[in-house]
Image (cartoon, rainbow, N blue to C red; front, side, top):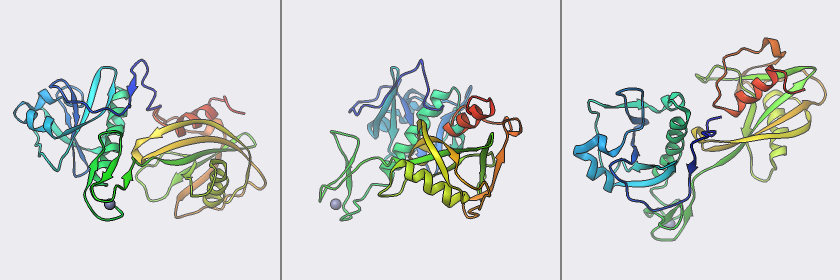
Length: 280
Ligand SMILES: [Zn+2]
């Protein structure tokens, strides 16, 4: 999965650090990310923007490290970078395809923090400017002290099985057309298992039993932590589709499940486990 970057090690402890010319930087602008395209697409270093490097370094914040590599976010409201011979803007949808996988994980994690900082410039309580905390990863109101932390929304993924088949779904109205599993965000006042029951009922009109936790996965694309569960059908297998959420939901035998899954997501790992007969 995307966070499994061994033998590389991800360090997300909060620190105040100053970038060096060999530090890596993320620069987002209007839903696009600046990448070095000279060989394979890679996250650039400050030394790649020599003429603007010093100014950009003074307007950047330390995000995290992978091994000894430090990653910084340049504040795009404070400095404007433009494309060069080696640097090009790409739509952020490309992040999913960056290779090797730890580069993709770095970019997705930086994107999550960029959304956090850029969407909390002003206080939701009093409207005053928010400042980055120097003690922890948070934004603090300069007037009333309101403190906001990065958004991490819990959500469940549910693999429902029945009679040797797995319930596969497709989202309605999205470009993403591969099969997925029933999924949804946890609502206030409910446990994760209650989310499983509610989402399965809402999306496909089915009841489940024997809910078992599998694994979880940080999923920065949607600012969430995904929690995977296996569950067995309890009652009728007749699907009643929520057509605002899904375009299809089908019971599928392992041999009929297509083979076009990636190793990035928990959803795909669970579908492949079932396809390969490793789940009863
Ligand atoms: Zn405030």
